[in-house]
Length: 160
Image 1 (cartoon, rainbow, N blue to C red):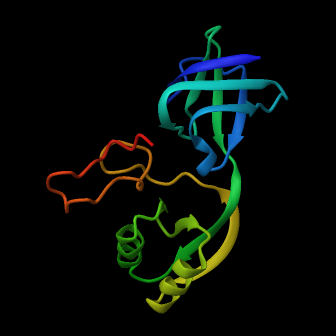
Image 2 (cartoon, rainbow, N blue to C red):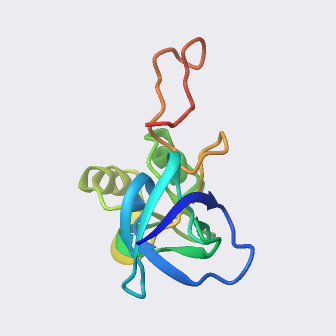
Image 3 (spheres, rainbow, N blue to C red):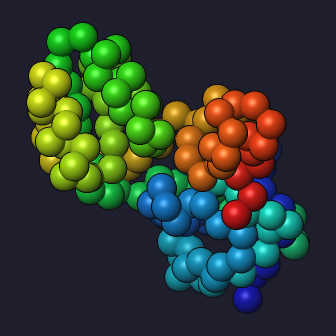
C-alpha cells in the first residue's frame, strides 16, 4: 500500500494518480483513501490538514497524488445585494464558495430558509465544492474557539 506523510498546496510535477474527495473528506490526518486507479493510499499526516482542490499528497516514493473536489449536494445562492447575503452566511461561519454571480454552500434547510427570508434565491445543485479559506490562512472557516470574544483565549489553531 502507498503511504503519504506530506501534503503540498500545489503540484510540483505531474501527479501519478488522483483522489476525489468531498469538502468534509478533505479535512483529515490519518485515513486510507481509494485513488482513481483503485490503488489504496494510507495518509498519515503530522497534523489534521485541510486538503485543497489542486493540492497534492506526496508518497514516500516521492510521487504526487492530486486532490480533486468531488461533486456533492450544495445550495446555489443568488440574488440582489449578494454582498449582504454573503455577510449573513459568513456571520454563521458557514463555508462558502464565492463567485461573481452566486454563492455555494453545503445543503442546510435552516440556512436555506433564512436566506430566502432575506431575499435570496436558493436552488439545490450537485457540483464540486471549493469554499474560501479562513481569514487566518487556514483552509477552514470553522472549528476555532470563541471562548473569549477575540481577546485572550481566541484560538485559531484548527488542530482538531
